[in-house]
Length: 361
View 1 (cartoon, rainbow, N blue to C red):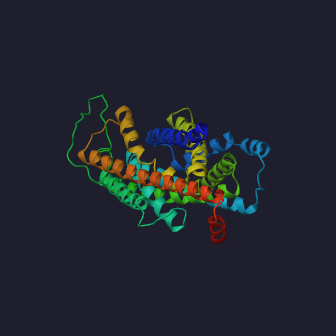
View 2: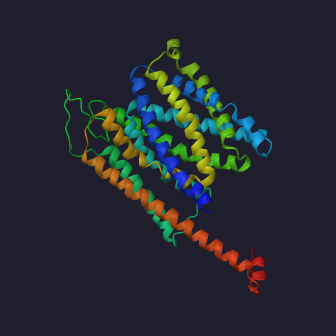
């Protein structure tokens, strides 16, 4: 029982927190690489190609280790559609980071729980009962998270710390300075990132449906990463006319591609697919707000920008919304466990009520 509880609760929590840390680090590395001239289109081709190569043996091991249904053309069509959604989401996200910053991406990622909850409710993957305390908590928490994301993105407020151009000591940040990121670029970046984080829950929902038909996480991720790399190569051949962009030498660009391919496209997708199969899309998306705090820590080490009052207010608001939704989700799960236990006890009871329950089910 303890091992099962650890696998279902503690392990997904630790894995998703770790992946949020890795994702913020990879976004920062990508931003540095684009400043050195790396094309985001070429980046996607190579990064997902590296991930596909690493996962190449997975279909063979999956088939040998367990009994799986046949990999039909219907499933592969869904994987292709997953790849299309994933590619559009990724190119929108990296374009947004290119216009703005990784910290803005971390802030905008907090729209994902709201979009996920709404889409899951529409497709009846999530129960919404206004008379239920847990449903009201999730709705209120979603609204608060969205409000906090907008505050941390669009409201600076007074500066709480100052840095000089000659200073080499880093300062805690949640924003790039206006000088480094003009307002027009900031707005464009916000729009692209909003599209990305609307498509993320769509990706989650499609992934869950595929896993129900073919429950092999690594095999699905292999075909997905290969599909995205091929799609990216096709698009890049049209939009990237400079052939020199395809040549990547030993540089920060190569480090970004390799790290993103191994930890981002490969490990990240595998962990999220496993967590989706185990806990569902809403639980997975709820870890996105943690990237705000992680981005702040990365700012101390790398960015060295200014801390604003609006960033603190927005981050605190997001944290409140995040834990409100998580409380509602936990309360709902406890209620479902209690109901399941009650029904099991009634069905195992020799009383006259058992046949009535069975006849009504």
